[in-house]
Length: 284
Image 1: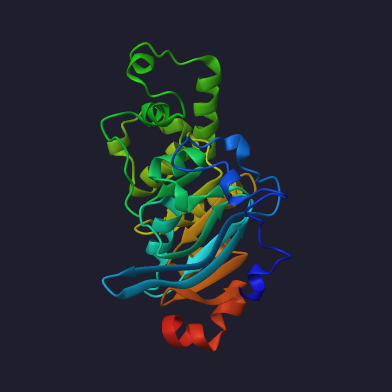
Image 2: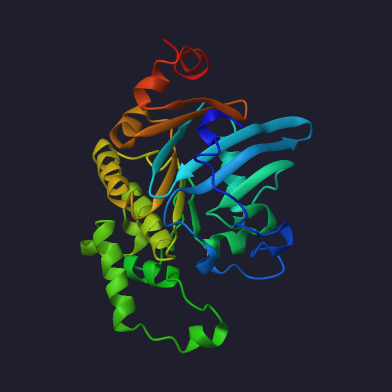
């Protein structure tokens, strides 16, 4: 284990006196968020993760620890393993070897995608996916965390607290004035913010954001940076991005991946001045 994942900082997967068989989370039962201790310390812990596809090692003994409330930026050249890493975290791709924990007790390797989402991990892909024939308000209502059974859906009526929550998210993503506009009529940046709002309606604790600034105007990019900074602390954000100006706006800590492993980690200035990063990614 590298220094960043020393025993002083790495979460302990099992509580005192707890055996492997006592682990509370597995495929045989749904995830109980009450079991997720994220009140302090590390919320996401990856150790010695390895993933191979037809002999190609996309992830190679990857070690990564993300603190609760942190906004971490992930950079690296194409093929560095950034997308595969997020696929592992969300259960889309199964790892070959290694350990992946969410909080102190939730073993991500034992869960499928739906369970991981329910546990509190939300993911946004590069291309926004919203319901364009519905209004902004209706998109957020549809994304609300609730029982999605057929009978509940048929007889569901929006309550006062739920309306308040939607209005709170509208304020957060700065789309309150667009609440009754069809999502299909929004700008690219506004659709990105709406999709982030839809994730927030699911009450996540960790947000994985894949190139969220791609295709945005300079003004939209700056507003996105302000949004992410406002979310950090209340939520944990992992942002995969190539736009270095955007990263400069939002970053406190940056991790550069290369060939499936952590190449460098630190402040943006430290990473940008690392000769290895310059050679494989940034250039001179």
